[in-house]
Image (spheres, one colour):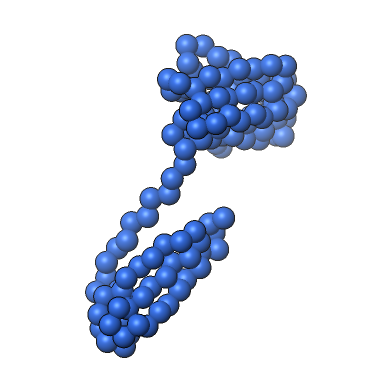
Length: 135
């Protein structure tokens, strides 16, 4: 069973978190985000540490699921307004797969959004690959 909802969220310097009624407002150097908490979910703030607490029936599966979901959404909001999101890719060089099929020279790889474009400068062969899991 997952215990995501029980993890604490550290709030970095420069980020402010405010709770008004059932909405949580997070403001930071990269923007502001707002989320509405569901009934039975509360947010406690103590010394730049956030804790998501569930109130009500402990055996309610829906409440337990929303407890972890709420914690994950708030943690992503804090990350998004403080440092932003980035995806680091590691290119593993394999001699057989990174060479042009026609002339054997290395590919030049271009990254643009969801597309990878491979291009050979010598024989001008081109090949593209579109990632479907990146939006």
